[in-house]
Image (cartoon, rainbow, N blue to C red; front, side):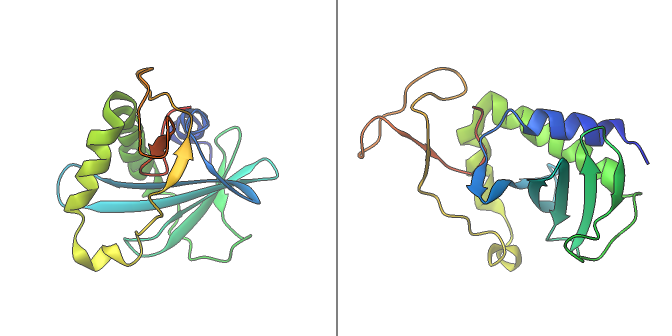
Length: 156
């Protein structure tokens, strides 16, 4: 099934810093603005994005570069069907908008994550990226002029 939200999500995500652990990988931790939290891990391999949601019952989906969604047979995770993914992509796109506007403020929002989810969501904080923030300002840290990539997600 082709999904325009999935295509928009993967296109927007490509503009953000990713980890490189063999394959490009993004980790997104965000709230829908109310009480529900999401933890997405997105990996890119061989022309496909493998997206796994870890908090609300592990589910996984494969999205190709054209936005076609399919069951993620590669990682063998549970498949929740395609009905919940458009809503999840919508929340993720809203999160990317907030990160673009104020990535430090968005990182601080993570302090409100419920304790029962914290074990699954403890990324290393000392990841580094370029010395420029999304707004173009340089951040100074004790280690020099490199910016700390706080949430694993910062605009390139």
